[in-house]
Image (cartoon, rainbow, N blue to C red; front, side, top):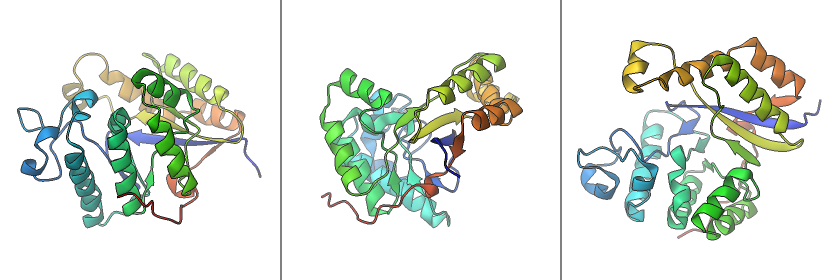
Length: 243
């Protein structure tokens, strides 16, 4: 059977066994604090803002990234790919190069989006960094699979809005492409309300309701979407000759 669309639906807010986080925002560092001072705020935590995190020294970003990947291996996990949490590494070409370098060193797929995608075109235009496109295409030549499109959230402040938003995302997928839809799952608990102050916490619970709903399954079948994991994507054979 052939499928017209392939879609990754990924769950964030925790690190499952198939994913190394690649996170430089929130919480404490995995590396020793003295090794990554520019990644930390005055309280010793990773910056909350992606823009603040992107100002860190490149060498420190690499140290923290390697520490996170090594930690996942030390726990006995075998990640399939390396995430780009909040897109920090896309904010500077030097960071993207280090990110690709570390991912390929550990034989992990970097989460790279095709330059022709809507989200990539917006980032390149806003930040005026055309070198990002070159770095991504260089990785593709080495056999790295690229996402054709990336959707970082399913919009909606109510369940019905989420359902409508999810249907719209699937309807817009182009046949023969690989796409990723990120969902942020949470349960309607006091703990989640304490972590996410205000009313935005409910969106995490609505994402959970959405992906476990019969409506979501119906749309997936109706639009001929094939759900795949990062392990299902082609594995590149070479490691990039980055220095």
